[in-house]
Length: 176
Image (cartoon, rainbow, N blue to C red; front, side, top):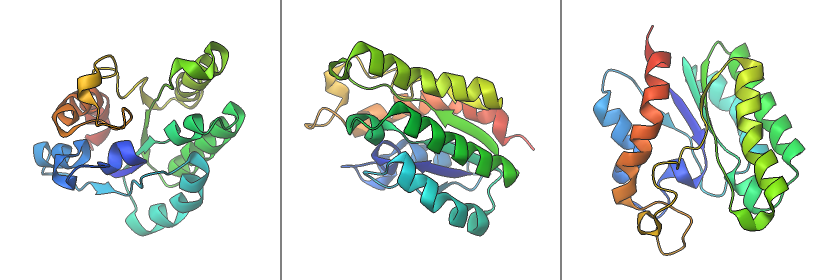
């Protein structure tokens, strides 16, 4: 399984052993998890990196967790949509089962932009028949205690809750 994400999957500000991807590997040791997440990654940068990772790693499952940095930078939703669609296409062409991890952005970006942004994940999942977690931070988003001092990145204590949100959508994809 290849996890392709940003700081939320790269365990920013934490030991890698505290991140949700590492915790998942501990719970499912019969699977190989490759975490190719990079802090600060945008969907465009991820799209540029993905072909080489698909070729080298040859994953059965691709988890796409990108878009938060696009939103925080105010990138057009259509750009996010196009990049994620291209990543889904590449993953399917490589024979991957795909899980899309959705994101939401703070409401200060405006209700229209915020809705279009979060709806993009649902629409792409439906159009492409891929698995979806609509908002990977759903279980922790409403409690500031689950975030580091920057109010953006989850704490180590929040990682098991993120894992509990992601794992049920992922497990069916791991079956041969």
